[in-house]
Amino acid sequence: MTDLTYYHATTPEFEQRPSLAEDLETDVCIVGGGLTGISAALHFAERGFATVLLEAARIGDGASGRNGGQIVMGYGCDMSTFERAAGREAAQAIWQMGMEAIADINARIERHDIPADYRRGYLHAALNARQVDGLRELAESWSGTYGFSDLRMLDAAETAAATGSDIYPAALLEQGSGHINPLAYLRGLARAAEAEGARLFEASRVTGLQHGARPVVETARGRVTARMVVLAGNAYLGGLVPEIEYRIAPVLSAVAATAPLTSDQQARILPGNEAVADSNTALNYFRKTPDGRLLFGGLASYSGRPLNNAAAALRRRMAGVYPELANIDMEYCWSGKLAITVTRMPDFGRIGSNIYYAQGLSGHGVALTGLAGKLIAEAVSGDVERFDVFARLPNYRFPGGPARQAVLALGMAWFKLRDMVGLSK
Image: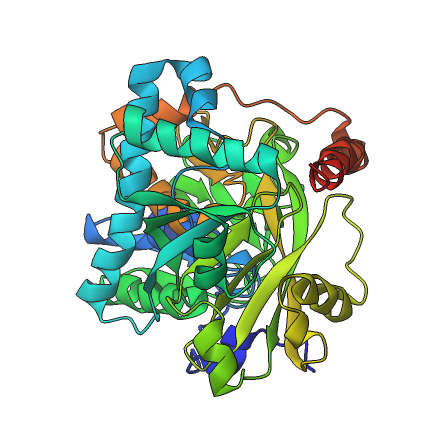
């Protein structure tokens, strides 16, 4: 087994971009080469802005190249959270932008001919009666309030046929979501951004940010002076910008890829090639890859501590769903950081008038990162309305400051206990 991600092992190589080794002036400087930053670079370059992007390591080394590849409709919170925070009209606009985010993935893949293995179909699986009720409420909200009707509740027999597992009493099948090779998609967008004139620098960790009429972004070997700065580091931004650091909490999640399944197993496990996530707080999520492996993720660490023996732990979890895979080889296993907010609503905003940020997508980043980059480019171009729908949402600092992850871990323990109790119902 290797700690190399399955994507890095199977996706064609992306040539190393240069490290920043000079002082530059530009219209827009973007910090972070994940999906948010690359999306922003592409949108800015298409609008004619001189654009520089700085990535601390390699493009795709962070969460954008290490996630489970699941494209999930909606947001990390229920739509009722947006309704309470901003009203029904704003919630309707937020829903439509979430749908747009998914449509944009398909459009970008087609426009730039990106071999991203994009597949539609998603199963939201319930493990107990409480979760079944929750899925029914979700379906009513999405179809009744927000007009999305391409979904269907499956009973236990239908769910077993769709998943190849008999542990779920029900599931919600919908065709808005799906799955993708996120690293291939990111690299395709990066090439498209460069074709439009964006300059991408790797191995260029940002060490300082000077605010002002023309902010200055500092690295070890060069500086970028810009009209606008976009902070797209999310959970990897660290303490660079104290104003927004404690508005998110990093969460570590692990993913493993099995050896290729047998032809019989491939026929029985996820025969429709949907992605799956269960409804627990510390959920399992999984899907099949084009070469017939099962990609299985979970094990969220809210404390900030490393995930030890993740491959063995994920295999035990996988065996709880598919007992026949209890002894299969886990050929790849890796982890990465996502960021959550207190409310699980995305955190978009400005620092002053010329520093924009987007973070805290709370597990829905594969699609919403693209939306974030798009809305920031719109706002800088003078059309602030859609960005400000998100910027006005009431997101808060996590309690505990530097100790916020310990506080978060304690709180999440209660939700995990509730899930465990729910299994007996």
